[in-house]
Each structure stands twice: as structure tokens, then as C-alpha cells.
Length: 455
Image 1 (tube, rainbow, N blue to C red):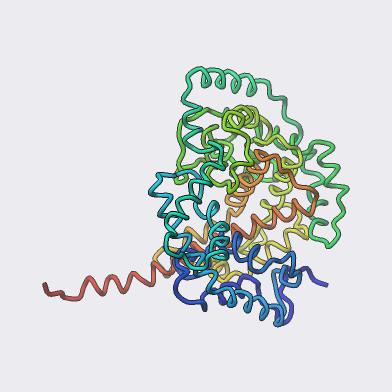
Image 2 (image 1 turned 120 degrees about the horizontal axis):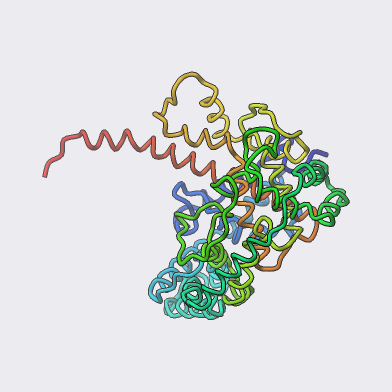
């Protein structure tokens, strides 16, 4: 039987079924939806799938492509939950209002409040009289549950001159004590075998286990420290696949601030920037170490191979790198490592995307972009897909390392690798849609500006 990620007969993508059912629910879901009316990615991830679809209880709805009966069942589940979802959206609006009133800035509100709002909607329905006080209490409770694990606490901790001096000494010593690099081929040799088997219903874990035992992740991390190129058999891509914007990663600095809009490449980030991302994205900050513990461990972690402590997570980076360098959304057949079963699954999914098909036409056409260049940059992104893939993969693996949550087995690693590929693809799709909306709105705006107006 073909893998569940491939369409068969009349099967429909589960994401498409969710999108259509969601849009048909009508008004009232704006705070849980994107500009185009589709559910936000976090809405699907945190509410729709775990709390409404519940694949653990409905295994037939866990596949990426659904038969007609399964698609109808999923559609019905979402429609039956319409009033509950509307109430969830109303509670989320209230919690955000309470958050602003309390001056809370730490964490992503969607990560922190989505599931709690669903609980409130299940318990109370639409917000009743006095709901403002309930919302305020919930926000205060979640702040307290974080145990001081906030960006402000991190800023206060790293403002201590004595601590900064000690950290600077530790970083310098750890960076200077790094061992020598080894041959890249030695680190990468078994990765293709693992990627060939990881998509099977019963993957063979022996090659993966051998990579961990022989510390291939650490070996590859040392290669990244020392070699700007030549690892993948050509001048491009570089050994680090965009994990740093420099030829080789620099020694980590301590830092004093961070902004999501200006974050550098993962291996170029300061201690503050690395922990800022962790604190901002963690829905359960109470499960994290305290801020002083986070800082102390991050100093050593930032100087470890690939910026990670756990060897299974480093091996996941190696596997992700070998997958990323073979990504070919445009189907150009560019030279590179041999394509494995994992590559075929991910590349075939990308190539079915309408935005990718259009991008392919633009990149091979001798004519200029008919939309005046608005989509050209998005098309060119598909020529270097390893950059967004590796950066997103590293952030997810770093979060696992900080929380002490390494993957349990090869199936778990493949779930992460495949999930990152889907996330990058969905992000690219959203950016294309946003560009098309802007292009379609531009003529109307120009026409409105040209039309005479009277005071």
C-alpha cells in the first residue's frame, strides 16, 4: 500500500477538508483565523487536531489523505464544533485584552491561551457576565505558572556584571577547547541508508542507532565548525546549509536583547537570542529549567557541536541536512546526493503545490515575471530550500534539547523531519497567497485613487 502522504483515488488532503469546513462556519472565528479566512497553523495544531479531531481516538482521521467517508466524518466533527469554536475565539479575545491590561509580554498568546480558551468555552460556552475577571485570573495564573521563566527575567539575569564576566570566560574557554574536525564523508555516510528506510511502515532502526553510537552528529558538527564548503560535492550549498550567515560559525556572544524580526541565523545567535526564542515559544514554561539554569546550560550548549548537547538530536540535524540538500521543489534535477525514499516523499508533495508549479514556470521562462517581480523572490526561494528548512529544524531540535526531550526512536525523528518540511511548504504557500492578494488589491487601489472625490 502506498504511504499515507500520497493521494490515492478520490482521497482528499486532510488539510483541505479542515480548511473548507472551517470557512463554512462563517463569522466569529476571526481571532483564530488568518487574513484569508483559513484557520491559523496554531489553531489546527493546538485546537482542531488534538481537541476536535483527536486522531488518537479516531485513527482513521490521522492520515494526510482521507477517503470520502473519512473526509465526511472530519467535516462533520468540525461543523458540530462550530459554536464551541466561536466561543473559543471570544475567550481568546478576552484573554488577549487582559494580557494587555496586565502588561504581560512574555510568550506567544496563541501557544499560551488557545487550549485554555477551548477549555473555558467547553465549561462556560460564550463568555458570560463577569468573564473579564475570569480572563484576568487565567492570565495571572499562567504568568505565575511560568515561575519567573520570562524574557524580562532573562534580561535581568544577564544584566548582572559579575555573571556576564563569568559567562564570557566560560564561552572563551569552551570555544578554544573544541576538538579537531573529521572527514565529512565519515559523518554523512550512513545518513542515506537511514533516510531510505525511515518512511517505511516498520523502519529499520539499526543504521540510525549506529549513527548515534558512533557519534556522527558530533562529527558533522565539527565539520561545520571548520569547512565552509565542499561537503556536498560542489561549491554550493555550504556545509552548514544556512545555519550561519558566515563561512564558519562565530564564537557565541552573551547579548542583551532580541527581536523576532531581526533574529540572525541559528548558529550566529547570542545566548540571549537563543533563550529568547525558547521562552517565547514554550507553551508550558513551567516545564523549563529556571532562568539561571537555562543561562548556565546554554553557555556550554552554544559551544557544543551544532549548538546541541544530545547526540540523538545532533544525528537528527545530520539526517535533516542530507534531506535538505536533496530538496528539489522545482523538479530541476539539479546534481546532488542520491535521492532516497524520504526525498521522494517530500519532493513529490512540494511539486503538487500550485504555488510551486507557478514558480517553476517563472524560473524556466525567458519572459519577465508578469506580476512585475512581486513573486520572483518567492520563486527564487525554491532554488535554495535548504535554508528555511535547516533553520526551522534547528530551532525545533534546540527547543527539545533545552527541555530534555530527545526523540524516542527513528519514527519520532522522521516525524520531526517531515513536519518541518510541511511547515516550510505551508509557510511558502501562505507567502505566495499574501503576495497574490496584494497584487489583486493594487489595481483596485489605483482605480480608487484616480477617481475624482468631492468633499
